[in-house]
Length: 422
Figure 1: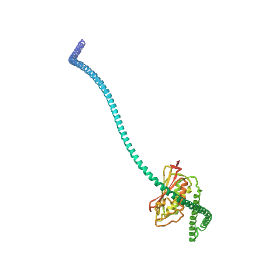
Figure 2: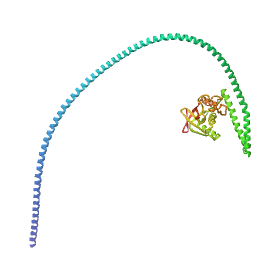
Figure 3: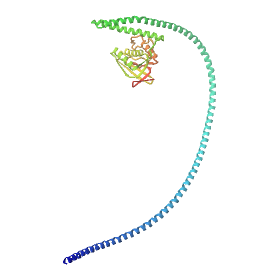
Figure 4: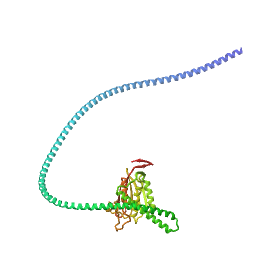
């Protein structure tokens, strides 16, 4: 029984606690509802304010739209006005263009008229001048006619004298022709004699040279220094005599137009340097320099061109007794090569420069000093250059030495070891 009462009391106590807890929860809920009502009232106030602001904004937007429509209408009117003004301007521009064309046409017409007037004035002035000239010419013609009559009389007298002079000159020409015929016969005899003499000398000179060479070979290392020197001197003299005989034979061939050359292609620069080297060995007392290059292949006789070099270099050495320098320059153009051989010797007078390539012509210096030789080296040199379709000349100023030039046509030009035929 007591246990039942305790149980009811406990349930009652629990129910009261539950009720008290629920009452607290309801109080909290009521407070939250009150706060929610306050918040709702505040949000309603905010919404009312927002609604009022939206109404004001709508009114403002309506006002702005009305203003925009007014502005659009004004712009439309302004555009219509501007289009009208542009049409007016275009019309005005067209009118101005037409007026300018009309004005230009009138100006051209005026210029034409002015030009026609100028031409007419010039024509009138020209006609007046022509009339004056014609009158002057007629006056001069009358004077000239009188002068011609006088000249005819003088001419008749001169012709009479000229006839007498012509008769005299004819007699002189006949005498001169006879003298030239005799000189030509004499020259032919001399050429024939020189040719025969050269041929006759060639065999014994060759024999003597051969014998001297045999003796030099046998006694070249002899202890008798005098004998060796004599043989060397004889050999040099025989070489000079051999060259002289060959030159005389070539002069005869050139004169008889029988001087023949080979027709082969060769490297010109290599030939030039080989020949200069040989000449340097033969004349160690002179410094022979060579500069430049032609890069050319030449078609012709290699030995004959070498002979041209030798003749010009030995000539430069011979006429430079007080100088020890010979300068050689090689160059080329598009279709020709050029060689210049300069000495610092006695020089060549202007009067001798035209004759120096003639047969047997020799040049001396101002003191009358003469040089060894027959005067045929340059003659043969010029003939060889001419045979190769080239040209040769000399330039000299007083006593400052001379430069001998010769040019030859180029057969081909070497470019990086490839020869291009010109």
